Amino acid sequence: MGIKLIQLTIVRQAELLLFVTDSIPTDSLDFSPIPDRKRLWKLNDAAMKLLLQEIRRNPLLWLLVFVPIALAAEKLNHEAHTLHFILSVLAILPLAVLLSHATESVAAKTGDSVGGLLNATLGNLTELVIAIAALQAGQYTLVKASVAGAIVTNSLFMLGASFLLGGLRYHVQEFNRVAARFQAGLLFLATIALLIPSAVAEHEALGKAGLNRDLSLALSFLLLVGYALGLWFSLNTHRELFAGTGEEHEAAWPIGLALATLAGVTVLVALVSEVFVGSVQYAATAFGMSPAFVGFIVVALVGAAAEMAAAFSAARKNRLDLSVSIALGSAAQIALFVAPVLVLLSYLIGPSPMDLNFWPGAVAMVLFATLTASLVTASGRSAWFVGVLAIMVYLMFATALYLLPPSGAP
Image 1 (cartoon, one colour):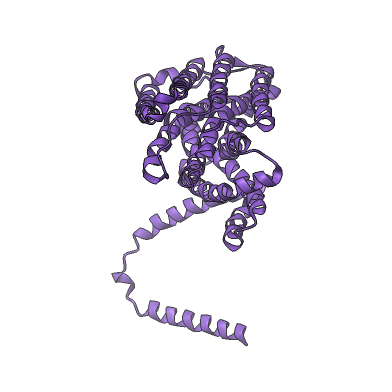
Image 2 (image 1 turned 180 degrees about the vertical axis):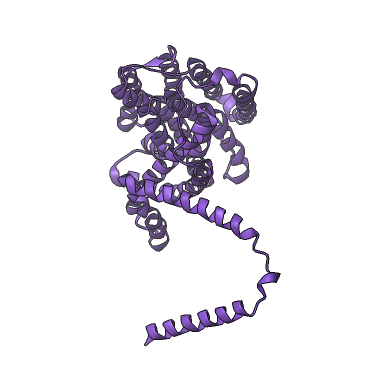
């Protein structure tokens, strides 16, 4: 009975529409916009077909079903933290793959330098969302551990894994040595900014007098100025030095579809990251992980999933300039932009101002990661064993944090 009623209603509406259409004089209508609208509809339809084709082709993208499941599970049951943790990780993985595919398409149009910067900026949004959520909760240990962990993860694990994956397919790969040394120089600048507050904190009279907090605020402004000048140098005055050495690649997606995918996926990653932040501490306790290990390793790996997918895919396609630009560019952006911004935001949304006084172990790991990245990128050539060296340093740090979590973390 219900189905027949619906069919009757549709028929009546169709008859009414035909009557109204016949009663309108056609000579008074302007149909000139119709071809433009048809052309736009065809473009949108073609872009959607490309996106659906990529989802059908890649089985990992089938995990996109976990995105709404993770968001809905967090709303329906706030107490199932371990389940939320697992669902959020499963949801972030396919989003990372989509982001990497869109980034490669943009980089094919804009160049590897700009494409790497775009991917690093959008990818670091995840780390920023995670850090802001922890900042509002006053979990400054998690914030500092995630910042330091992101720098070390990007400059060691992401860079090393890119060298390893690319080296397994190609005997020797080449990349822009100037661009790599430039990013490593920015990282070294940030390491100095982290060393100074830690050294001042050793003097209790100065640290308790509030000098460390004021010093961190001043250093944050200096780091932001240095980062802005670095962008001006690499994208404007000396951009020819950062041109990729690889051949031109045809974009897999149109630039419009790639940019729309970047924007949409970034929003979804930010939403899923909020679920991840709310469950990671409880899941860490359930899995027997220390807070330092969670912030330095787990949060950093999940937060950098989108960038890693793009960097690894580019390395396997012999586009090592893009991989190095994503890995070191992301690490430099975390150190020179995200960390200072978090210090400034702590004055607005945090329970108390945050400083740049990281515990000595974190500063040492950031320093050694910077030196290692400078060493492995000095020649502008890489092979699979170079990646193994960088990954081994990262695994040493992870083992130390898992077995000997720092007791003096601020």
